[in-house]
Length: 286
Image 1 (spheres, one colour):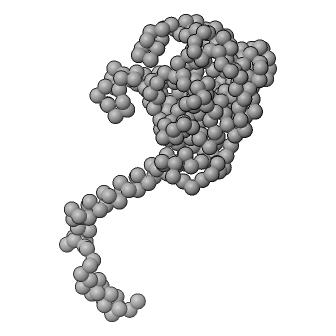
Image 2 (cartoon, rainbow, N blue to C red):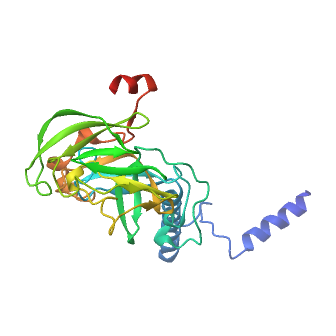
Image 3 (cartoon, rainbow, N blue to C red):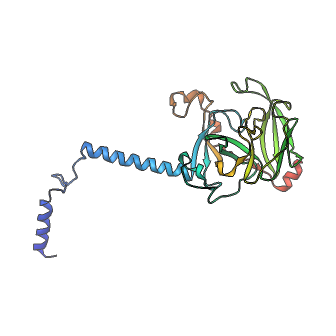
């Protein structure tokens, strides 16, 4: 570029009324209107990013009841893996996505702890353990679980005092149950003679699953056919993977001033995946 051309370009830059440069060559501060616009843009990007993560990767949930004790407690906060089983319309906010069935679907595993939409009211989220697979029969007799007519083994651990208010201080019998496939998990029983301790034989339809709470006498699950019943695969929201926060149930996540006396630090980042025995270890349990 010739010296004359350079001078002409420099002069045109100085003359440009839209060029915002301070006397010292720096940019002048934003106006109040520009600051509000910039803040709004940043907030929208953050909301969009959170929505994408919540829809496609992980969604947070909290536990409001004791139906999954001792695995999950009231006041636990957990992340649910959305890609674990693929995506259905219930993977998206308000179930508005125009999807039928699931896309990128992956088979659930027996023993998984799963968040699903209640079949009788899809606005409500439930969390239970997958016990029965499509085509299997499930029954409870005298408090004992049978799958395909086979008694599911359990080992007594001890007696634990129930936690009010949901258990009203009732003693809870603590067992370790081993599901087919070597899935080992804890359950609570008040007795073997409760209202849900003797059921009919349920045959799980294709495309559906039989779900049960670990707190067997205090769980509304697939045994209650007119409320939960068999859960369609389409209704699965995701697999509960790990806890990220926990209180004793007397404080919400945002109630920071209550944290000092309500947090359960020993539950932070606990894994929810059940133990899966090798075939050899499973044989030794039977």
